Image (cartoon, rainbow, N blue to C red):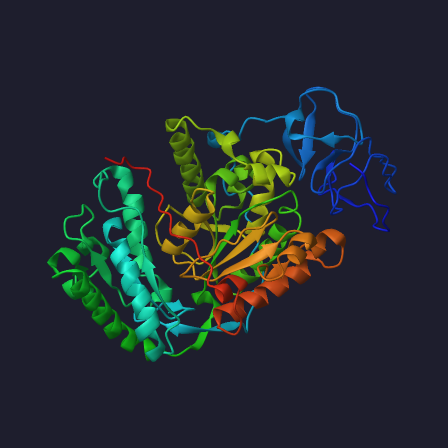
Length: 510
C-alpha cells in the first residue's frame, strides 16, 4: 500500500497500563517505518483500529487489551507488527459458577436533580415520549391487510389529528405454525403482549387478528375487552376489512389527539443501550461516552438497560461484582447459562460473533468485543436483570437479556418499555425503530464525516483528543432529554428510517 505524505501525527490508543497491544487511530492506517514518540516503530503497515504489538511475543503469551486477556499468541510476534485475528487463540470463557457476586458494589453517586423532560402521561401512570397509535397483529397472515389500512390511515386520516405523531403496524412473524404451548414460547408471546402496551402508544390498544391462529388475539389484550380486537374472518371482504380497521383507528386517534406534553421527572424515562457495526474504537470512544451518560441518567432517576448476552458473556466476570446484591448476581448468571445452553443446542459457539465488518474494524474476537461492549453500562451498580421480553420493573441500571442481533435486541428492549435507544456504531448502520427514536453515536470522526445526515453524536473526537469522554457524555445526556421532549429529532426520525420487528423465538416451529 502506498501512502501520501501528510502532516497527520501518528497516534495509537493504549487503554490500560497492563496492555501489550494498542490500536492505530489514524484514518488511513500507518505505514511500515512509522515511529512514535515512545520509541515504537511499525515493522509493517497497520490499518486504522487494528492492533499493534507493543512488545515482542512468544508463542502462547497472553495478549492484553483493556487490562484483560483477549487471547494468546499463536506464534512469536515482533514488537511493532500488526496483530491480526489469525495470530490470536481465544481464551476459555469465565466459569459461571466461580464468579464473585456483589463483591464490588459501586457507591451511589449524588442524585442529579433539576432535570426533566416533556412527556405524555398515560392512564396507567407511565409516561411516553411519543404519541403514536400502534396496531398489533396476532398473526403474520394479516400483515398485508394491515399495512394497506395503515397506509390509507396515514394518508387520509392522520392529517386530521396533528397531535398524533404516527400510526404504526406492529407486524411480526409469529402467531401460527408454532408450538404455542412450548415452555420457551412464553418469550415471543410476552414480547408481543408488552409491545402492545408500550408507553409511547398511550394505552390505546388495538389488535387485528385473523380468527383461526394459535395465538388467540384475546391473549394480547390484558383486560380481555373484545372491543379492542378485530378479526378479519368475521368481515365481508377486503373493503369491509379496511373500513373496519380505519374506523377503529379513528376512534383511538381522537383520544390520542387530545393529549399534550407535560413536565415529567427523568425517573419516568427508560433508555436502551446497544452496539451495532462495532469496531475497535467502540470500547474507547462511543461506549465510554454512553457509559458516562448512563451514569448521569441513573443519578437522575432513570431506568437504563444494557443488553446483548453474547457480547457480555466473556466479560461477565467484570459485571457480577457490580450486582447490587447476590440475588441479582445469580439472575445475571442464570441468563448467561440459559444462553450457553441455547447456543449449544444449535451447535453454535461464541466464535460466531463478531461479524466480518467488526473484524474489518479491528475487533479480533468476541472477547475483545465484549470488553468494549460492557463499557456502555458505565460504573453504576446493576440493579436488576430483565429476562427476554419482560417489562423492566426496577429503576437504575438493568441488564436486559437479549441476543446481540440489532433487530432482535431492539424488539426485546421495546417490549421491556424502552422509550428511546442509544446506538453506538463504528462501521455505520441505518438501523432504526418506528416506535422509539434511535440516537446514533459514531466511534470515529471519519464515520461522522461520511454520514453527516445519519450520525447524531460524534464520539470520534475522543480518540483524537479533541473532546473528553465527559464532554461527549454530557452532550449525549442533554440530547437524550431534548429528543424525549420533542425539541430535537434524530436523523433516523427525520428520514423515517425503521427496521421490521424481529421476535426472539427459541421455541419449535411446527
